[in-house]
Length: 542
Length: 96
Image 1 (cartoon, helix red, strand yellow):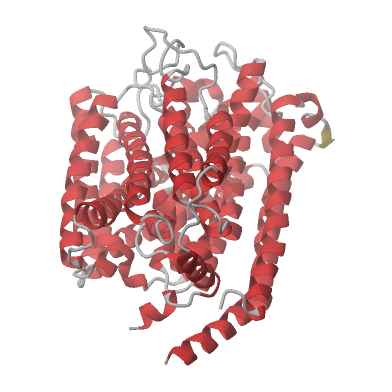
Image 2: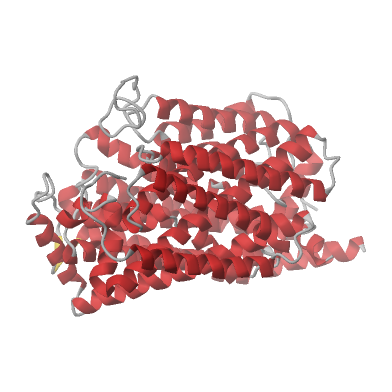
């Protein structure tokens, strides 16, 4: 995200702030009303499992469609064309993994966190520690990327250019997030996500209709004008791009092509391992509702990415790449500039406020997941041997949420202006390598045992982190986080193509090299329960 | 319980649907990604107007994702839910 571009912001910052403030007020009222009973752990962590499939599906879309996927993908399509579209397809297809393999069985087996499922039949303590470590790692990276991104959004939408001004806004975002989580728990957070998802999808849908109307509903013509605007661009290197075919962003060399495949792999396998996505499946009462949630999420997310396709090419055609790249916020400003072009100050204000709401909803979802994992997996199960009351778990979780919030504000201010875009890709890579193999094995492979889980989780986590530290994302490249030094020896910025297969293999090798047969009775119980919901659904009826 | 024919049947049906379907969409997605990374000229082949092969295959990914979702929901409602419910009722009835 470029922060120092010279051009001034468009629109009226006061209108943007006003509409955003209205969003905060409305969601706060909803959160406070929803939070009447947040005393039990079930209420606080899962909203009492009282959400319906469609509600949860909308909330999943709200949790998943981050500012990066709204502003980032529309912008990437506007400037690089087809390659931005490729990106969005990975984000969508990934949901089939969640639908077919994970959602329902996970809902039947777990209670609050991902570790519940993994430790069902494996050794509690080591597996919980490993699962919580990777949950906290993924959440923190994702959180940091969102908070740092908020700084760039501020420059673009509120016309706040000074670093201290942006820091204040990052702090405001962090404080609001803490309040949502503390007051609302999972129920309040879910409602924030539902409201945000509805606004985001309606806003994007409205803009899509307006773009299509401008071109007489002829999509081919949008593509044609987008290409001709790109071809006549004066910004260096843009004009020769063929934005209707792949290759403009990732086509340069064999390394960048493999790097792209590696990213695609992490995207498609990472989603079903993201802890804040997994936790959402516990907010519904039955496996059937979990299935309906994913169906709703797939339809909404799919529709949204189809909208961004039209918006991206529409922004290229109507705003033009020169204006987008010169604006504060660079590529990310494509969607807001298009909103201004289509609907003036009012539409720009709405879209800006939605973009902000997006950051808020996503960070709140991440915080409640991370704090639940710490309170439930580390504090209650490991430190206190399960001898804590539920009220105490909720209390610890609230404290964790505050600590995380403060940490996220501090790190977000430090990271503001740094190139941390790779953090989102990194979060997906860690989720795909450290979480997904173990989840799949423990649901489908009876022989799978504790050693396999630990090797796979730690192997996936550590290999991903090491490869990213020694990759061009961190050092040695112009776009790196620390461009001035070069200690990179791994050529790919996306480590998934190595670390994901490695984690799958480690799970098999670890399991087979150990004579531990597991707890046969527990294995049978988990198998029956995951498929039929015995025990899981009955527990809720009481 | 785990060895009962009803349960074995439920498990077999689930796996015989889910595993091949997963293999199918992962291979289809991988094909698309590899084409996108290496076969730029093929993807740029125009089909009609400014719409080219790459765009159609990309939209095809959306289509198959929606289609697989629909097929799975139909399958689960017809084949899985009644079986799971029957086993659950029998077992929970017996416990009480």
